[in-house]
Image (cartoon, rainbow, N blue to C red):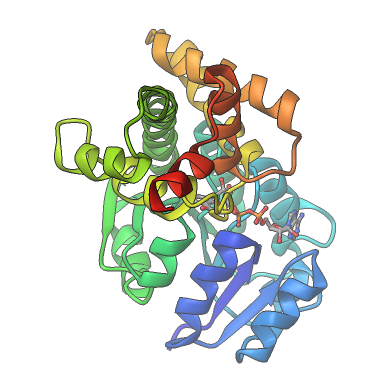
Length: 303
Ligand code: NAD
């Protein structure tokens, strides 16, 4: 059976690696030693650097890192994967990355006899843990089939988006859409709260009407209304996705008026809230603008 290397054990990478651990031997690496230790306690084998992952003999290597810049580093730096990995290996990049850089990395790896596909995910850490996350793959059909046999341990929702880079393009467009919906829904929730509608009732009604979706049926009741502003996805990571999506729009000459607006709101939120906050904290911008406290308003209905 295939042994797997896994590089990048953060909020998402850790959750995906944990699902693979049930079916595969996993060689893991992350700059954060404590993230490695958590996985080792659950049965993974610690590698000593990206070259250690390559030297393990694993021929299916997964990366799940903040951006394509770190993916390039762990593959091509002096102690990178290419220094030790065997010809014929497959790298599957589950980072939400830059499609152009991904195509470039895939082309550079050809001379080493190594394939690279993009396989980003959507559905959040909760979706990864529940085994329902969507995986969208960019690469040739035969590599899609090879990757699918491994990714089935993570989720049955595996899609072939197209050639190398198409998975990343699909993921960026998905996140641009979900960001626009997030902003519109938070704005509406602030208004509804000000009008005097109970926040949780707002979410319930929204989730059954024409504005329904993940933000209405999951994000509002689980995180925003109870004030649990920690959904395991960094605000800065979503801003990165919006930067990449709107750059793709510019490159393709496809106007993105709503997507560019969302990117600017996320920039404003980053400046105001800081680089290290969770995405759900963006509700504070809307609460302040409308002069409401959603969590407090909800509690007042329960008293
Ligand atoms: P994270 O910030 O929680 O974790 C990133 C991990 O990468 C950290 O553990 C860090 O130490 C490690 N790292 C950084 N540079 C490294 C390097 N050079 N070598 C080895 N390790 C390195 O991020 P995350 O939430 O796990 O997200 C990872 C990717 O998945 C991002 O591209 C993100 O956009 C995407 N994603 C995340 C979510 C989510 O809900 N968290 C959902 C979908 C997609």
